[in-house]
Amino acid sequence: MSARPWSLRRRLLAALGAAALLSWCVSSLWLYRSAQLEVDTLFDDALDHTAHAVLAIVRNEAAELSDSTGGIAYELATIDRSQPNQIVYQVRAANGFIAFRSHGAPVAPLTSADDRGFRVVSLDGEELRVYTLATDDRLAIIHVAQPMGQRSELGRAIAARLMAPGAVLMLLLALAVLWTVRRTTEPVVRYAGALERLAPEDEGAVDGSRLPEELQPVARAVDGLLARVHEALLHERTLTADAAHELRTPLAALRLQAQVARRAAGGAERDEALDALIAGTDRAARVVDSVLTLARYDARGREGIGAHPVDLDRLVHLVRAENEPLALRKGISIEIRSDGSRVMGDEDALAIALRNLLGNALRYARSRIAIEVAAEPSRVHVTVRDDGPGIPPELAQRVFHRFFRGPESDRAATGAGLGLALVRRVMTLHRGSVQLVEGFAGGAGLRLSLPR
Image (cartoon, rainbow, N blue to C red):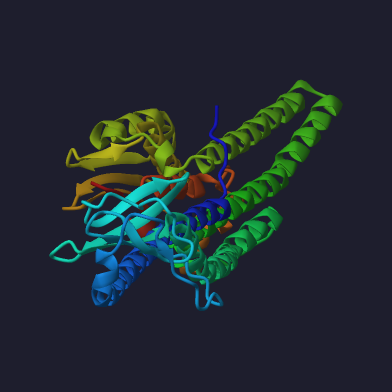
């Protein structure tokens, strides 16, 4: 089962959004904790300052503290309640009884007289933060308290005010991430759309100049693939059109010879027409075989060529043995000069290339053909030379075109004009090359160069 496709845009949005949200949550938590700790510190300082202020006043009222008899403590009148302040205090005399308490302070002691410093106590279902301070002679003990709820509420309010700008920035960051991701992936989406709209007959590369640098190798690979596909389609169409054109002539000749044989008055005339019919059939078969072979190698990539050791000396002798009867009938000698070199490649494909070179030489040679195998440090050359009429310079490049036959073909050649095109294709698949060289006495020569 193939993996489900994934969206680069959605992944970027999810990753960047999650990272931004996590960062905001962590920073908000840290901010909230910092605000709460800061508020606690400020309120603790306020309790401490209040306790010392009350203690300073109480020292001047030492007589009243000594006269405290344990009755209900005096509740000091409130002076100004325009600014709500929930800090309350109690003043205890040396005998432990409460002498004074602020407005709103409970009647019962906030904490034990022996406590010192800060404590959290629960009184009537409410938690209080209590700070206790006493004189050295324990003449007066001060309890200052504040509800914990007030602290938490104020801490949350401060944290909310501090986090509000962060929330706005988070929203702006989310919009910026969305815009950036869309802007960044827009060239990729546009490039994909251009590829989707591309028709098989369209030429040229798809513009990928706006793609990011990381995707430029992909764009170049796609352009190369498109070029190879276009070239393959062009080869296929050219091969089909040329093959149809080349087959018209032998088919018309076959029909003509069949009609001649049908109307022949005598056996000799009929036999001559039938011989011509067989020759035309052989030529049509060669054309079809060449077209199919070339199409098969056109469909192969370099990875489709075998990579096995090939003994060129053995291969050359094998191809010569196959063509020896025809050479004897024509009175042509075939010489072999080989140093026993080997190459890595497809033996069948190399044999087809060598057969085409030797067949081409036998078609034009007068009396002599030489096959030479020679190695260099990095390459191996296989050269086939003949003493025929040679190839005019103006046709040197055209001889490798498909279905091309030179001026001599009208009287000497019976091929389909695909032999050298097939040789060049085999060399391309082997990362080699084929080129024209000098032959004997003005004749032609063709050299195959293969990586060693």
